[in-house]
Length: 301
Image 1 (cartoon, one colour):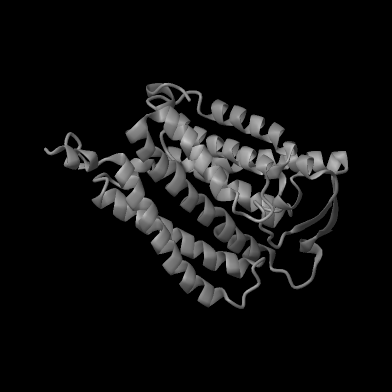
Image 2 (cartoon, rainbow, N blue to C red):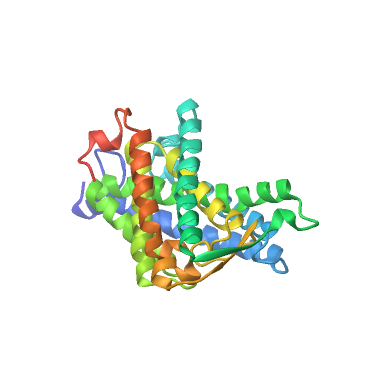
């Protein structure tokens, strides 16, 4: 094989090298997202961007874009199965997803209690008391639009395709580090982001990677991601990474932005640090008996 071809092709694996696979994935993902986003904006143009209908349609767009691109690239460029990313659907998968959801519930619940007890926030209203609200249908719409859709698509792309291909190309340590940095940089484009939010989002990135490291599957991380966004925004009334949604509990906030997170939400304030520590402890405890996982078969990161 010529030296030039060797820059692109791994003969021992009979496929493109990891770096080129990642480049192709990113290009296709951006193109697919742009196409579907254009279609989505046309459909959702007159919808309230804080309402459940908008987020459901947006959720459909990100699920289709993420799943389609990952499946195609995984099948025809990586030459591996879609399931091999950590998507084996079995009884442990279901348990992990719900465990992740509960862990995120404990984390955001801890933050909520800290806010209330310390006087950093005050409950203004509970929307279930308002007339004309169908609580069950709204809950289902929100859970899909801002919970499942975001949890599935972001974990599939970041902790699924990108992290695992970077691991193939540069080893686990650098893959984890660069993945966390990229995840942070992506969220720096969100409204009201700060340097502190970038640092804390990077730690959140590792929290989600930790779920994959400890299980070898994506379900624990997906459950955590879905639970965090859903409970944080539509239920408890916090801003979700700079984006506002309707919520069942209405809060008014006070205090320094570096403590509370300000307009970005608690992910940009030091108030989230105890919850992050609690999250790592709970995840470790939940997975302590797991064997043959990346955590045990690779150098721990």
